[in-house]
Image 1 (cartoon, helix red, strand yellow):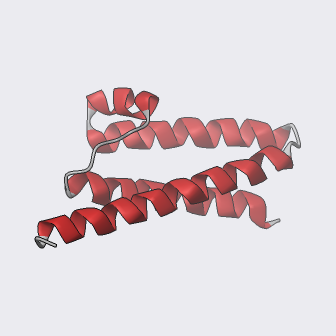
Image 2 (image 1 turned 90 degrees about the vertical axis):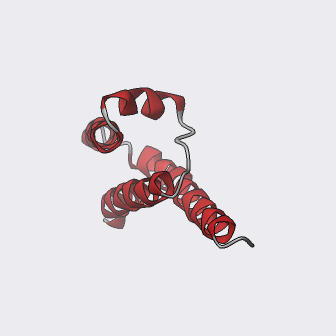
Length: 96
């Protein structure tokens, strides 16, 4: 089933795009993740991904695949948002 693999790939994409946006001057908008990032940007983001993957594992063990499908839609939106932010930050850095 592609749903769990898609979830993991979206988590990796979210991690990567968030790190790029942060390095370009962006700010983490998720309150909980931003609090975890008090220990360090990379460490906090990794910790947040470990937590979300553990929750997803529990959801899968409970055979609630629909929840993972919805989470994929949400995280797909998050990744798209991050990409948009990266584009805006890139344009700003070039004076556009």
